[in-house]
Structure formats: structure tokens, C-alpha cells
Image (cartoon, rainbow, N blue to C red; front, side):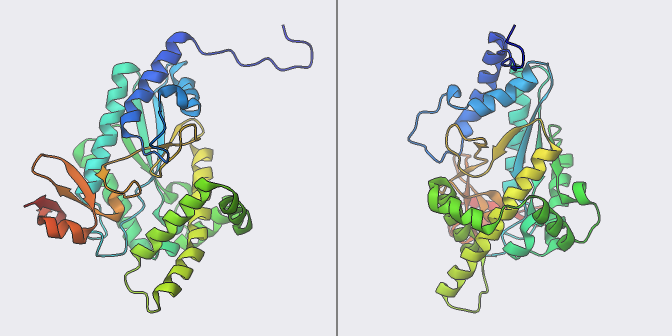
Amino acid sequence: MPPAGTIAAPAPFSDQVERTCAAVLELLLPHRRAADPEQAAPASAFPHQLHQLASFVAVGDPIVFTLPGFPCKSPNPAKVLGHLPDEGERLSLGFLDRLCAAVREIHPPGARMVICSDGHVFGDLIRVPDDHIDAYSDELKAVIRREGFHHLSVFDLRDVLGDLPHDEKRAVVHARYAPTVERLRAEIRSDADAERLYCGITRFLVDDTADFPGSRSALQRECRRRAYGVIQRSRAWGDLIADHHRRSVRLSIHPQRRGAAKFGIRLLDSRDAWTTPWHSCVLHRPDGSWELLKRQAAEEAGRLVLRDGRPSHYEAR
């Protein structure tokens, strides 16, 4: 027994639990979105994720993954086919559903994925109308139902704050969870990963702006300012998810280093590690592969294909 007044260290997980967790993580590793791709990344390099997995495996519960993302389509028509999910989202959701199904072969209770759709959290900052965000989230749920993706569900601000006006929802989340701009500035000055995220979000905001009336330098200044707000709200959303899904394996659509608290996951192939289905569209190549590209690039390489009367993707010529 430990001396009186001390707290015993938690018992280690059994060898079988650890082997199962490592095997589940091995399913994720080929799809890792890495901030350090030059580094070797065995399962043992991800202690946070192994511990999170073990909290489910040790008691025989289904594993719960949470993935913030799938917010809305970019407002720049040169990048996307419209404001509703298209083949890029359908393929990505199918990939995530198959990933969860594969877990059952290793861990019989299986797994499920909660898609934490975050468009309303920063819709005002990325200049996307709230009705477009609602329509995008509703169509995500419709795709999941139509395609029979039984391992997936969608969680958004409506599940937390109901029918409050969108601006009020954002204000509540910001007030409860967002870090200060001063704190973020200090992090960005001192932490290379925080700086890389800030620069990546700034670049996306610049690229997503289609009708800015001022100069390029003025646009960049404005987007640098808005990037702080996006990061504030993104952090707030992450903390809110943690409150509502206390037991989960945290995934991210942003590149992550090994050992980070979140595991970066790549949904589809692209030439840029930051590209997502909601900032692009997909090109179907003759060899059967799919690649995320900006709409202009996909148009040059292929012909438009419709699904249910709506633009879906491009087929390579």
C-alpha cells in the first residue's frame, strides 16, 4: 500500500489491451496528416491516443472518435462547386465510416465517429451565410442516411444551444471558452506549430475571399486579424467538444506532430497537406484514384459530372 496521504498511480493496462490499442492506431497511421512527415511514426509515438483508446478497450466499450471539421463550403466559387456537400464529402464520410467498421475486426464492440461540424462557430469570420451553413450540415446528415454510414453522426451548435440566433450562439461559445488574443499572440511568437497554424488559416482566408474591394496588402492585413478570431473560436469549439464528449479519441483535419494531443487525419489525397473537401472539389482520375483540387484546376483537367442534378465532381479527360 502507498503511504498514508499519497495517491496510488493508476494500474497499467494489460498487455492485451495495449496490443489492441496499438492495432487500432495502426489503422489510422496510413492516413495520418503529419506536421512532421520526415519523422518515423510508430504507434508508440502517440501516447495520448493510445491512452484514449485504452479507456474504451479496457472496459469493452465502443471507441468514440471526435473530428471537428466539415464546417461549410468555401465562399470562393473558384475553389468549390457550390455551398452544399459534393462527392468530396461523400467520399470522405465513406472513408471515415469504413475506418470505424474496420475497428470491429480488432475490437469487437467497434467504433463510431462524431463529426463535429463547426461552421456556425466562425461563420461570421469566414464570411459564409448562416443559412448556407445550416444547409451544408443538413445535407451532411442526409448523405450519412442515404449512404448507410451507420458509424457516423453529426454534432453542431444546434445540439448545444438549440434555436438561439446564430450570433448569440457564437457570443456564448466565445465568452465561455475562447482564449484572449493576447494569449494567442504570445503562443504564435513562441511556438512554431502555433505560428504555422496561424499562417495556414490566414492563407485560407485570403484564398477564400472572392470580392475584396481593397488592395492585396489590405486583404492580407484583414485576414491576419480575422485569423486570430478563427483560432479563438476553433479553440473554443474544441473545449466545448471536450465538455460534451468527455471520453473520445480526438482527431483533427489539421496536420499534427507525433505525440500531439490530437491525431491529424487525411480524408482524401491532395497535393497540399492543408486541403480539405470543403475548400476544393474532387477529380476522378483514370486509374480510379480521387484527388482534391481547386475548382479551376479540376476544370482544366476534366469534365463536370452531376449527381442528382447537382455538380458533384470532375472526371479526368
